[in-house]
Image 1 (cartoon, rainbow, N blue to C red):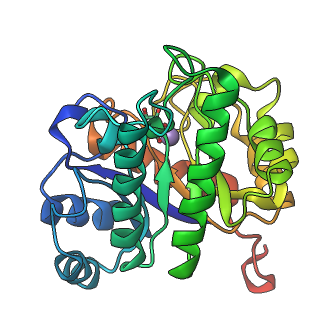
Image 2 (image 1 turned 180 degrees about the horizontal axis):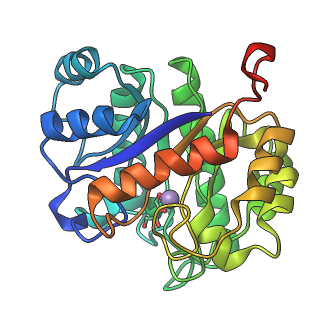
Length: 279
Ligand code: LER
Ligand code: MN
């Protein structure tokens, strides 16, 4: 299973669930030293750093880019796809589009998390879901032109009232004919919302595109009370081939959260021994 670790360069998100908050050179070095395959980037926008600079960092540290977040549109600019103001919704979609293009130049899909917003305050649930569906369609098409999917992330009830569970989000995509959009299973949100995380992963099936590999308390897997065994089994059964990405709090320290993540993935996804390795 491929691993990734979050690297955040957004000052407004300095208390967020990201392992590294260093400058890019230091963050890439620490990610590589901890043994990750890739980094997941949380940047203020598409102009923070050039694509060539990121590619140089990737070459230097032999790391992939698992995905790029779009949450800065919300935490820095207060934008959401379900804002009652159509002009704000348009700006939100334009910001996401710019991150799809930035990630696309790196072969990395963009993620819609907090920028999905919520219904209320002038937007009925139906209106908000219509706005979400139309934006997801447009984001899916834009990503598709770059040969990538677009990633939609259900969040827990304290962060959105649109979709809190994987199966209802999957149904929304399937029934709405929303193409080229995959789902993100953030195991922290799922520990709050799902009746059974492993069953939810099975129901998501081939729509599952990315995993935030986090424990129940949003610390690295193994530092909370989620049981990874049935989840690992469900991921293997669905043939998941994406990244397990550590979007977790840097506790007790960034390096310990990183090490625990790498160890937990090795523990739960260890390849079966080859005949030569068998005792
Ligand atoms: C984003 O990946 C996420 O999980 C949200 O909780 C961020 O607010
Ligand atoms: Mn997440």
